[in-house]
Each structure stands twice: as C-alpha cells, then as structure tokens.
Length: 366
Image (cartoon, rainbow, N blue to C red):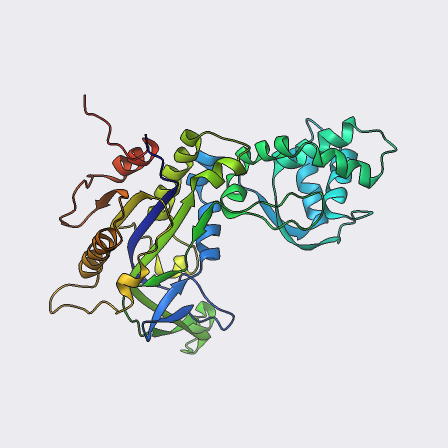
C-alpha cells in the first residue's frame, strides 16, 4: 500500500513564439534565476487557465465564482439556485457571509473571494431552517456547527480545495490549499523579441493612402518552460470533508492532465502557441520537491537541435541525483514524446494518469 502523501508533478512544455503572461507595462513577465533572465508565467495565470478550462468542467465540475461585486454575485446565484431557494434567502445568505446589512447593485465585498454554489446553497439551507428573528451571531453559530457539511460541499468546488481560500468574514470558511504551484520559468536564458505591428485601415487604403490605422509593439519570445506542482493528498482529503485517498488520486490524475495540456489564453489569437507538454514526470514522495535547480545553470543550446532535449536530460539526471544523494525512495513514472532512457516510463499521458489513479502502480495488461 502506498503511504506517500505528496504527488509531485514536473512538466516540460516548449512554447513557440508567444506572450502568455504580461505585466502592468504590457511586457512579458520574467524572473532572474541563476543570474539570467527567464520568461515567466505566474502561478495565478496558470491556475486560472486550469480552472476555466473545458477539461476542468468536464471532469471536476463547475469552478468557483471569484468576485468582490456582490450585486452581480447576488443576481448570478439567485438565477442558479432559483429551483431550491427564493431570491430573498440567497440575498440574505450572501449578505451574512460578506457581513453586509444590505446588498445593492454596486455593493462590494471587503476583498475578492471564491464563492461556491454548493457552499452557498448549504448556508441558504441553514438560513431557511433558522428562526426568522435569528441574529447574525446566531446564524454564525449555526454555520459553525455545520462546518463538516460545508467542507463536504467543496467536492463541488475542487478549485477551492486545491488553491485554498483566506476567509474574508466569519461566515466564509478558511481553506488551506492542498496544491502548491510554482511560477513557470524557462529552462534557459531568454532575450525577448519585439514585434512592431500595424493595422491597416481598409477604407483609407481604398482611397490610395498607405498609412496604418494603428501602430504598436508587442514583446514576445519562445522557450522551454518548467512547470511544477505538488499535491498534498492528506490536505486535499481534509478539504473535501474527509474524502478517501482514491478520490484525491482521481483529482490528482486530472491535475496532471491539465498541467500537461492547458495553456493561458493571453495573446493566443495572435501567436497560437497551443503546445502540449513533451515531458511529464509524476512521483509519490514524503515531501514536496521542486526540480527547478536542475536549470539554475541555464540550459545551453547544443550545436544542433534546440533546448527541449537537453532540458529533459538535465531534469531526469537531477531527479536521479536527488533520489540517490538523499536516499529517497519516491515512486515515479514518466511520459515523454522524446527518446529518453527512463526506467518505468510509460507510452502515453493516459497511462501516466492511470498510474496516478492506481496509487503508483502499473495496471496489469490483460
């Protein structure tokens, strides 16, 4: 029986020219690592892309709604919960959670927070069953006595169980995130390119003018990116109201799939960098372990070929050195589109996902 608590996921994904995550100056996000500039994709950007993906909805259900606009939230959930609760109950529940006396169209919460439909429905149930004259304090006590039921509702808001939530009021439960997700960085140094572009005004062109209707510049680059996530299986089970390990592993398999396939949407209509991962390493261990230091010395381009294969070779070699040097006994497998000499490798992402769901064991072939 596998007793390892942490599922570590290491991804190498090569993106063609793109600008997948920008800062407030409309420039690519970057970081200095190993003394050189790397292009970066923030963990917030990647988490949002995962949460908003079609795959997430198909396999993990509807994600939470993240907002501070309580008027819009009220209207959204009045419609979503109309078959179970009247508008008055939904509005009262939102007001209680946000500690507001009244919800107007322009009412804002103290901070942006993730709201889950099933969790709000549970609080609506508590409000309905309470005395109509109950005070906010009495309702809070009723909610506090139903924390287990509220935790169970996060089965329908897995993104909160994964990413966590800092409570913004006494009636919104705090959740310690079960997933740690690193900022994605390139394995090698990157000097950005600048695209100077124009948009031609068709009607001006018809009149014989050659001037553009719009001029601008956009920073972009290409590179091999290292993605890393660690999933605390015990914490995930707790966040889901006491789910079993099998349920946590099922979420882990879907997380591996999304980390290998989901790409942020920024500037994709311009660059179409819809690339899939070329290397996916999954391991069960006693602690979260990033392999980013495999690339502290930036990967150098060989005389022939690009950065992808040498990045993969450095990743695998570094992982093996850590295992040997620290006496670790992690269970691991790898899927790659490259020709890598890795013991226990599988031939497809589906096989790797099944390995995770099967708690680190390969299913016997019929």
